[in-house]
Length: 110
Length: 115
Image (tube, rainbow over the protein chains, first blue to last red):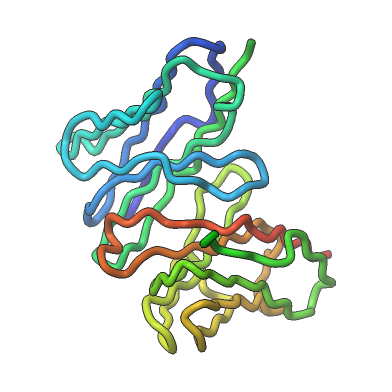
């Protein structure tokens, strides 16, 4: 079956670095997305990985290893506004359908 | 500005009533999706449509219905057959050209409470 796992919650300190892991087992793979979702709001797109390696975008970076079915989202110089849920999602067919992980609730403390 | 509009933000209904959630987009996207979000669970796909007048069931379509008469609009009806309708509903769209790598654009969601 299709499955995506990520930690339910994490806590980090303002200014620090945090890594949110995601492992997946899907019948196909066309890429992996990370979204950020603040409470009660719409998810917003953060990153997309389809090839192995690290994609850097400002304070946020995302890594993919297809052979291991593994990705992580790295957040640097954490700010209070980074407190949110981070969703890992895999595109597994050509039609653009995604399977989502349960989300990781990140709390940034002063 | 282009975007996806869901209305209303909060909706309350009595058990046994059908209710329709609105989703409108002006991004000129071909593909539209409905997801359901419950606490502690990932987003689950209810229905999706890749072109006008065509739609397919997602993973949890039972108790829901949709229509796609216009490119801009993809309303979702939650019927009385849906056993646990209380949830946060998210509508999304993406360009059809490369759907497998195009990020989803989400509306702000409708929180439905059925009592």
